[in-house]
Image 1 (cartoon, rainbow, N blue to C red):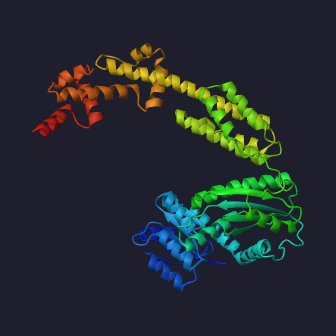
Image 2: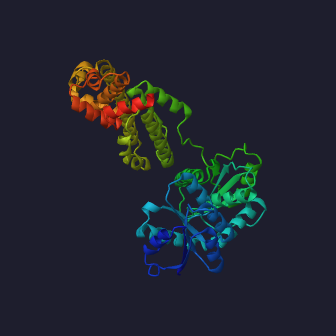
Image 3: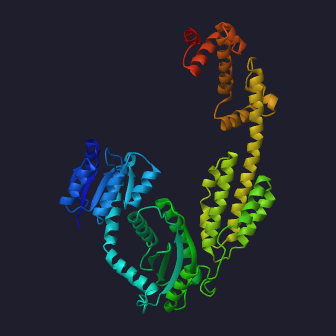
Length: 499
């Protein structure tokens, strides 16, 4: 089936560029027309059956965000791909909320990127042809859970899990927008639905979401449990990214019989404090406790390598061998703590970015290798912070020496001897910490002093000598490098300001 496309961009050169990127007919797309404004775009949509709109986010008058909202309201069957010159998070989030399928930055736009986006959007639209069927199943599910409807899983031999979650919606927003957000969240919760694990999400008016997942061939409770936790992590991240809302999984259970589901769900929603029987799903700890985080932070602050190593290994010992999801989550939390401390101490995070094997280890069952690797990372962080503190001390001593002796004929060799380290080491750590070379720093201080002398009616030659320059021509060269003018031009400018 040929997909009909229009381009919306206020700049003709941009429209022509997009049109030239691919062979539209050959790739299965019919470029029906182009528009330079939102009104022209809506007119094209009114007179033609359009499948995909390529729209520019930034346009004079009504921008792409507003246009995407109009298209979503008037032509919900039309897919949209946004193209923007700027990577603005607020615009990305707002336009995705309006149902835009993809977001491409103009400087990355080429034939391959455009074709990939068009094909992915076309594929998603093909899947959406089954939406009416999915909607009918969702309605059957809602009737079963709350209105004594027929069991939609009757005769199904797969295992069904039920997860109850909450999202706090803003009650001050218009009802139309609230409904749009709810529909979007339901789509996110069902996004990974497939023939092996069919997910159906229902919204309850008390801001609860119920997700029923039917596992076709997975029978292991541990595997089902792990898959649900990993999916909940993704749902939480996606809902936060797109809508800026906090998603919280409150409870989940794996009933022995489908007929038990409506009663348990209704009882839970009436009384959230109600405890679902432990036989349904064992409660397991899958994240770092606050106490463990505090202990780690204290040990890191004290630079206690042995203490940190013991804490990390004990954390992994408490995770059941079969609980892959807990290992993944706790590994991510520990890495977050590592990066937070590294940023606070100004330590490079580069060595952590190379530890890609950590998540490979976390997905396996070798907790000993995983805890040893994580413990090693924490110890390396402590060693880096110690080195950082030592190097900061040397840099501080260097700056003090320069300020006291800048008027003298000094060099890196003199300062290194005073600090008590080699010239090469001092040069490296000074540049790493200050972003400047030793010579740049010395010259900057000398030029600042020279400006003070010149402002006090001292001659240029005298000022150069007083701030440590022994060669007159070199002083001129350095002064212009840092100030953009020669010493004479600087004096002339100062004189004109005085009178």
